Image 1 (cartoon, helix red, strand yellow):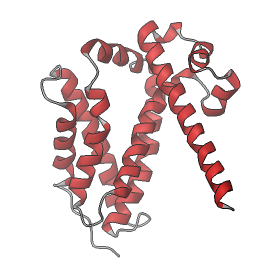
Image 2 (cartoon, one colour):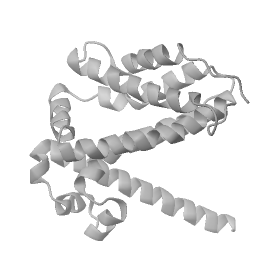
Image 3 (cartoon, one colour):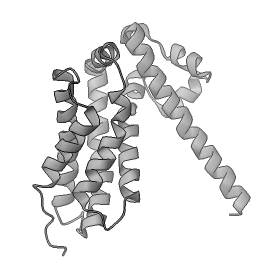
Image 4 (spheres, helix red, strand yellow):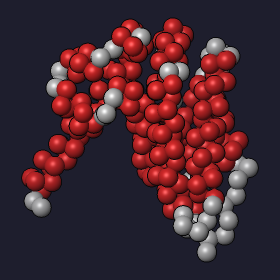
Length: 206
């Protein structure tokens, strides 16, 4: 493949990612403003200025589109962890990449948070969210295995730690909501991730 072809392929891929993210975020915002039951797929596609066919290329439903916002965050966490220095302690790397991805949520006001919580409490959306959370654990476990020199096929540690840090982040968000944002969300996420990673130790490779 020539440099020009590679550049064109990269551009198309970036456009696809941007379109997917725009559809997901628009679906969430519209549902938060109007209520999930009052949002049609056509409303989402009109707002993003794409066709319904384009929507169905990415999502099977508006609920799946909304839930994919979590999947996007998880993918960014995995990518960011891969880019952290290999010499940096794993606990520090995980804490920083998770905290960074929750800065945007921390900027929301209380009314926005309550609206989003109402949308994501829908059984249909919650089911999709749970699927994205489960699917996110394996890619993170793969990076953890690389960083710790463990074998994902034989060692339990990478999968357990991946599940633990995602759970820790969710617990931090729940605490932040319950305390009405008295502490910065990124700081709470960082603290929660450090708590679970610093009490874990990787088994000997091999």
